Image 1: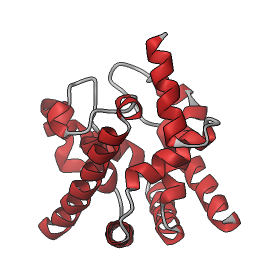
Image 2: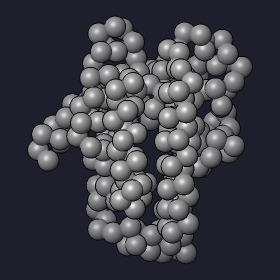
Image 3: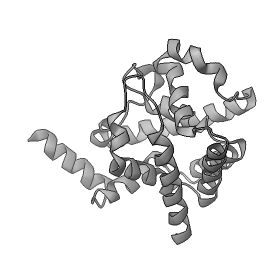
Image 4: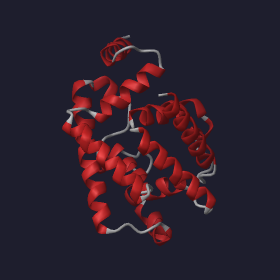
Length: 209
């Protein structure tokens, strides 16, 4: 675990560096000044990943950096295909092309993960309501769904990272694990809660006050 945590720390540092370089039409976004939340969100996700997937993704970040490319900028640009299609059309040709075979794998991953997200939201509705909307159909210019966010992110992965990630997701499915629940368990632990049930109860209490 110590090695995995070191790789996670390095990965988050590289992501944060690239996140600081993302330009927004409306100026700097507030989330670009909230490093604490950024670290918690990203660490919660990476702790649920297999170590080899994180190592491969860190390689992607470093390789992109060496080439003068920003994977975080690319991620947000790809999200705009749904949230701001007219703007997206102006720079879509600049983004790396993805073959149909790869897109099919990506969409299979997205399908599995959105099923987990919906199962989680049904089981823990208060917790589920604190995050993004789930489906791309719920996107607006100012709000990006989990589905669109995931599609943007995994589209930035190298073929190697995507293959490792896909194998991990398929294994979770075979083992009956809910990936969303794994990530949220990691997140609430960083906020001082012991269980998802405890967090759901606390949110319900806060709602009734």
